[in-house]
Amino acid sequence: MLRLIHILILFAASLATATAGDFSCRWMSHPAPDDTSHVWFRRTLVIEEQDMPRTAYIHVATTGRFVLYVNGRNVSTALFTPDRTPNDTTVMTLSYDVRRFLRPDSNTIALLYCPSTRTRRQVSISFYGIAADSSHFATNNTDGWLCRHADTWQTHDGGEAMNRNTYPYRWTDTDQPLALWQAVEQISTSQHLNISTPISAEDICGYSTVRINPLVDNAAHMRRIYTPLFTEQSADTLIVHLVPNERHLIRVTLRGCRRGERISIGNLHYVCTGEIDEQAFARFTPTSSNTIIITGDSHFRSEQVQEVESICL
Picture 1 (cartoon, helix red, strand yellow):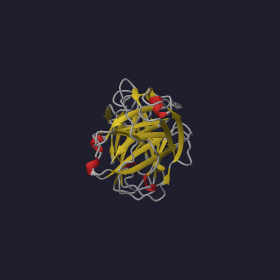
Picture 2 (cartoon, rainbow, N blue to C red; picture 1 turned 180 degrees about the vertical axis):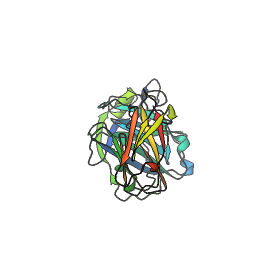
Picture 3 (tube, one colour; picture 1 turned 135 degrees about the horizontal axis):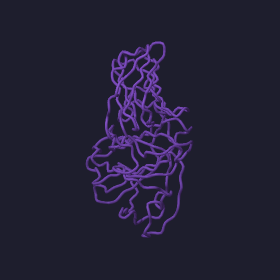
Picture 4 (cartoon, helix red, strand yellow; picture 1 turned 90 degrees about the vertical axis):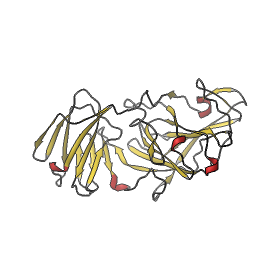
């Protein structure tokens, strides 16, 4: 069963009441952090049917951007959170109600992280709620958390790259190969609190935060999907004209590409998998450009591009 720290947490008006004395914030990072690599974090918990919690929440603090999954499902309606301006490294936090995603078996919590800067304070993740016996629980230890560099990363020209050949599995699922995954590096910030003293969430977690509501605030939501206005072709280069005055994440469906073939799609650099149909898309790097140029290496042919979609934020 989950290793629970039994404390009474009453989240109301951003306040909490503690019944135990020691709290700590445990930041996690990849052992070799940098300012471009996306990182996968994951941990699997086993919850017996009789121990299924009445309520369950996951609280995430981060200096970058992220997507949170439970048992392979994105728990948010957002494409990513938060929707930061460049070089913004403010610690931002939010909580997700994840009870409906849990199951009486192995449960995998997974997070895709995109850095805003090089830091060892990448994410801090807490799991809390009301247990089956109606006691309150909260845990933010890093035991069992694994990480590895993702198959996407930021490029130094302000774009993004994707190479799904590096890990051809569903990394968010429970039963997946974990070769080359590593234990996370942990940073702890501890403090002592008096019993029953009213405290803020910052006191519990150990950091100053900006709270955001993932449904309405500071998250990148898909507003609409557009098709291009028109496309020009010059040899095997495509110039795609998009709806103007929008921020876009571009998604391209490809067919008949060779494994390892390289295609440039605006600010996205994509390495093909060689599947019959595959999709290339940027996760964290929207563009405000009205035109997207699609070109590739010597193997690229314009007819490989089946569909171009503009996901407007």
